[in-house]
Length: 382
Image 1 (cartoon, rainbow, N blue to C red):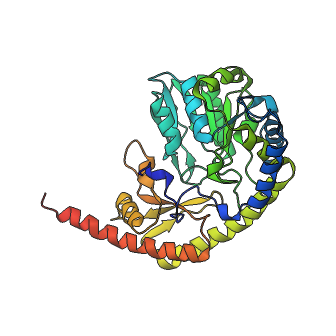
Image 2: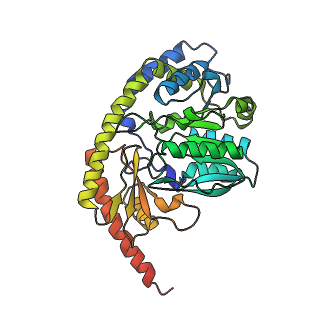
Image 3: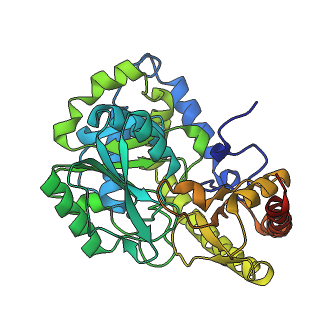
């Protein structure tokens, strides 16, 4: 059965962006927590209660976010969702009307783009480059601003403090809401993780969105929002209408996973594993692909962008790679305005060394195939 290409396919872990190494997840401990909650749940976990989230998970998550991410919040500001995408969909429905302007990163995250466009938003480009966010000319009537400041997706750059303060100033002046998508914020491999921008917001305009898909595994389908108090009262009814509330049994087990220290230990371990894999990925690409692909420098995130040399079309490369069993994304797909840059968004985290080696060999073949395809296109008399 077909599905949207950016979700990938089972068995194609090289090099799917955003895919963690689920094989390293402590499923034994997780199963014990889930079984314990199932056996002693009573009736409280088998209905559609607490639509904004299980109280124990909201308390555990608030404590974690304050300590680990610098988020200023308490439990009654947190809403548990069925993943970050559900949060974007819900926020788009609540906060914008058809035709409203949304300042959206470019290149930017396809999931957020699609949710906003589906709600009728008019996306206005917020250009992002290797030197950061270009905030000089904000739209005068933006209703909403979407950013990934801790680890910009897909480029992997981090928003500097002066840019964060300027963005918050713009939001306050224009009375716009800011969605801070903490994309890969936990995975920084030099120094401590960068605190969330929400922690420096004193006007109550930032909505902080996160997910457990990359810390744990995507199929868990649990994410969350930290809402300003002014928005929170509108959420329960909206959740009831959309049905986007998460299973209580999973939430209760996840609360135990956090409070018993299992998530912190798992995250610490995965940072070490991913740091080594990122270094190895750089080394293999430098030795085998350096004349065709240039990796961007980055010390955060579980995917990395490789810029293609002139003459390559990233969509042809992606198609050729898919035919060889690889799953990756073209950088150009993440642009909506102007001339896109051509490159590849490559997830390295789910692959061990032999898988990475084989994947790069296949990618080298895909690059060669794509060049032949492009030459054929140019010489096609049609």
